[in-house]
Length: 151
Image (cartoon, rainbow, N blue to C red):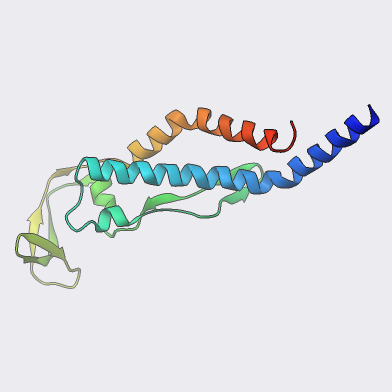
């Protein structure tokens, strides 16, 4: 009986020591999951010309911790990503045409008028999909975490 309590105490201590790293891995994993979903949506709906939009999806590789809250930023760093996400009204865009592809150039005096364009809401939909399946995924990881530590 004494040995059982000692084993339990050691297992609990190990779990407590490993918890911050585990929580970080959970948060980062959810960010990676959201990025994969955003890239899948981008591919399925062919939301690209040069593939820069797809390449520009990213997620933090370390969570920001405030108390018991672990936060990971997910987004798209393409300069025009906000317009793909939310859409835009008709407006002038500086740049030039290379064949049938318009090249954005913020310093250009020439350009074209585009719009209106409806938003594609790729990030929102990717985050919604991630959240919809998050509970089961996290429960599996928590179960594995404690099983590996003798619980």
